[in-house]
Image (cartoon, rainbow, N blue to C red; front, side, top):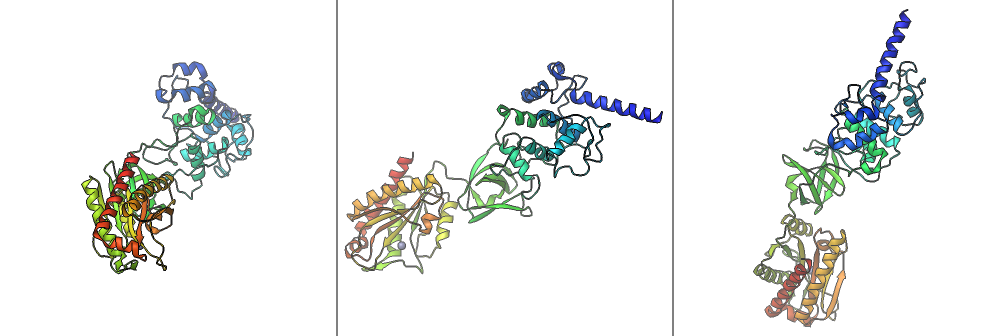
Length: 461
Ligand SMILES: [Zn+2]
């Protein structure tokens, strides 16, 4: 008698559960008025495929949560697992008492639940977004293609790869604030989106709902990317000087941004706005202070470089181009500072001015260097700029044309800006040195460099 009542109670419970999960179908779909319009295609797709159903009162209840047994049942239906009720490997899922036992055991045998639900299944517990990601990445056999970072998903955690996989596949995405919410209970509408996108590729989405707000450039030599807006948060990676980042939102002194495919929080103090249409060029007079550079035929390189650089500055400014000078007097400036200060000053282009030297007195002529390091557009722009300047310069000076060349000099190689290094001529060569010692030729050199820069800007626009 007791047993019979017990069994009857169980069977009523089972019946109710089955109604919630499997009743409704098309007849309910047509009448449910609480399906969010934005996601109605995905939800109706699942309803029509009898994967998710409405409630007997003809509602969908999109904001209700999904239990573990419901989730596995629906995923099991979606991928065609055997749902025949039977004994399971879990101590809390029994054949008689669980309508979901067949799907749960099938999922277990397929390895979909390994590492997710171990000894106990806790069928009535709400399934979280992170657990769903884990389940779906296995159900749909997804792999990680590209790193996508969410501020609340630890890189070392067990769900990291799974969340990455579903985001990569366009099945799941994060929230607008850069989080994924892995420990949040999933809602029915969220669940429906994930499963519908897993089954039907046309529903898939781009990896993030984040809307870019702006663009920044990293001005520190190396800027830490953190998992939250504060130095107490863990470091996820670092971005080198000059890295362009896309910002999504500001939080106090921090911005949530993406650079080099790492998403996280960056401190605002080390970011600057990229230069806009206003042209700002960095002019770098080579050497200075304790570093005299080359010397030959009465000409000291640091002095020559500065004299020409100051003339270039004047001429550019006359043409409405803003100039950032890495030095304006005879001081020593480390190479890395020349670059970082230029980037921080929002310069869009970098020109370093030098004089050449050789142990032999015969080599002579003008040459301009660029570097193919880093970004393709940077390298391409650098090469163009070198060509424009070289063309003007050797003609203006009447020196031999040694052409444009690639080299790994620090200021053009480790520089995020299109950048060139000009060798005006050889101080070790009497003919070149005589010209470079004169104000007349320094003026000509400055004019040619200025025109080459203007040629470049005209080409770019
Ligand atoms: Zn030099």
